[in-house]
Length: 299
Ligand SMILES: [Zn+2]
Image (cartoon, rainbow, N blue to C red; front, side, top):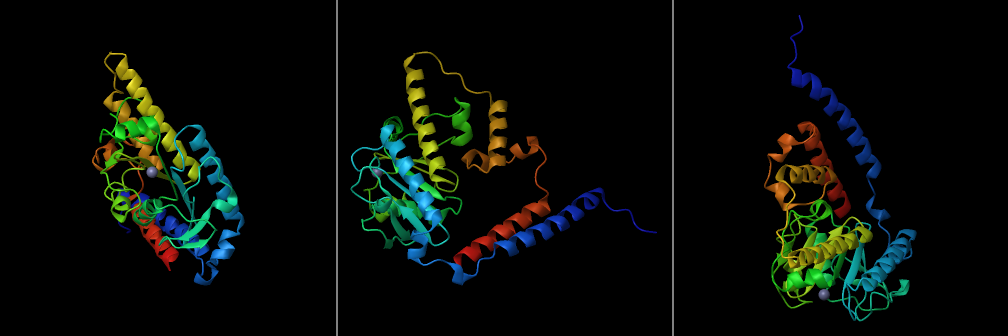
């Protein structure tokens, strides 16, 4: 007589088998032979690069119109495939960008296409890309309200506005270093895993996301939040926080969306209150596949 299976075995084994098949099929489909990595010239002239340059130009105008950049300040970059990065040049207003101004670089900062010199702050972007594979686009700028906090060396308080909590939450504050230096670029390293938004002391802000547009949204959300906090404090009244249990609901949703937040790392109990989590087998498979995909990209 067949022995009765443990209830968990009955439920998880078939799922993990099915998932394994699907994942293996996806990994197979995503395999890109090394010889298909385009040359710098082909990459720079691709439709993807053309679309990304158009997005960078749109975002540059938004940054300038919203007064988040001044003079030639601020810079924008975006990953192009596994080997290249498009970045804005030095000594140009982000409100005046043209497609020909945008440079193509490798992940070591060598310019491979484009007539202009890249910005010295580009090293900051490269450190972010190297340290966090989820970062596909980076925006650095000097928005006035966020920079006001940056010159106090402190982050705005958290727990007051739901949209801010969901998209950003606690921002990190990186110590001051001379812009353009390697030491400056490396100031963000302790924070870039758990923060998509980092205040740069006595300087400005840097945000990373999956697209240039979304990275600029983070700047908007941060600067508006800093402004709102400053105005609220001027009312002289006590500010009311979002209740803890409601904040936890936002954090659970945030975890589901894959948005970084240092509070998620420190609050495993959130899992207990969360809706059904991933099967542990599935979790292991996803991590294995992500590692394989990363290895494929680097080959
Ligand atoms: Zn700057």
